[in-house]
Image 1 (tube, rainbow over the protein chains, first blue to last red):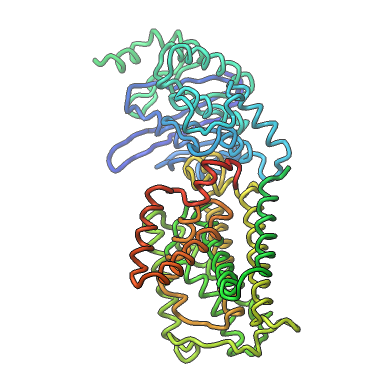
Image 2 (tube, rainbow over the protein chains, first blue to last red; image 1 turned 180 degrees about the vertical axis):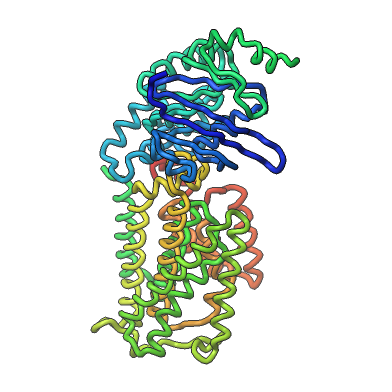
Length: 239
Length: 311
């Protein structure tokens, strides 16, 4: 593929004691793509993306973002370069209003130049359909709305790369359909890396899919290619 | 309309009026409460807004108190410059303690701040010849003047305490509604998330400790200037617990809470001890009731029930 890689990793590993959670992963994510990362439980998906956004450090290997080596950068600096991460387990500011939640995210990008903060906050809330609930306390929102609030926070960051860690977990079917439409909309302007268990979501959203098993990439390709890949079927069904 | 600003300016106006109507005894009490409430407001920046529980704020209060007092006593400075040295001493101490203590979180942070504070207390005792140890020393009335203002005069003292309180009150009000305040609150609510939104939370926490410690130290320096006594008891554990108690009672994370809590605690002791020798029992029962039924403190309840916009 001729496209420029937004993010690449070379031989990154994460070891916990003797356990190799992620080993020698070479991964390239071209700009503008929606990439899904799938794999059985414990395959190392969350560990892998946590290394990308800097929540945990690598044991060895190199991570490049926009051609720049970011391996040694702390999380907050990588975020300011344009990576956004939404947590697998909903992580919002429960005691603050939905508005404040998003405003904190927007301000992280704007710094102290906050004259457009209000407009951008409302804009992000509107895109996920939460504008009418902006004054509600985030912790009181329905679960589905909390997940949407997380997405709104990600949008407020206007990231170049949006990493979504199991965003549809616990959502109803109708919510998942709305979510898919939302991601398609967001993908017009942002590269997306999606960890997802719901195979229907993966098949309908992803341009390409990367499959992780036991901390290693076992396959990568278009949804159709992955669908028929023997190694992937073995990993999921057991052999 | 800016409701919070109007409300807090109204509080300051009320305190100005009280100066002219309060009986002598309560007038003196309120001057002292205003200085201690300033101390508590400093504590509240760190505890109420940033979510870091320090058990060692007495060291910052003492740094201001002794920075000021020792400069008068040994360097022969007048109280104006000595007051500034007190503020500077507490700023430097809070920076140093912050750099070390922020390597820890949670309970360890509490223990580390407690230990540092004890070290400061023991240091004061150790350098007995300079600090006069436990006994402390008096700042003579003749030196407690700035220009022609006699700070030991009750009325001047009240207004000086009120001026300090008002400045800090408005500064805290501005801080907590500023972009920086928003980040501090985000750290209090969910630090890992704040970090993943691109904030260098460590730096914000350090800034919060320095602001908090400096305000505490400013209150300490003012206490020495206005009430003329510098003593090691102010560096002891109870003086680290008081601001926590006042802030919890008044409402952690509310701008007015520290004043309300300090005032409430003072009059609770004052009034109950007038009635019975077992006043600590009364105080204890009231505190237990408050923690059971007003978990967010008095102003916290006001915010929940009536004034949602209260900063």
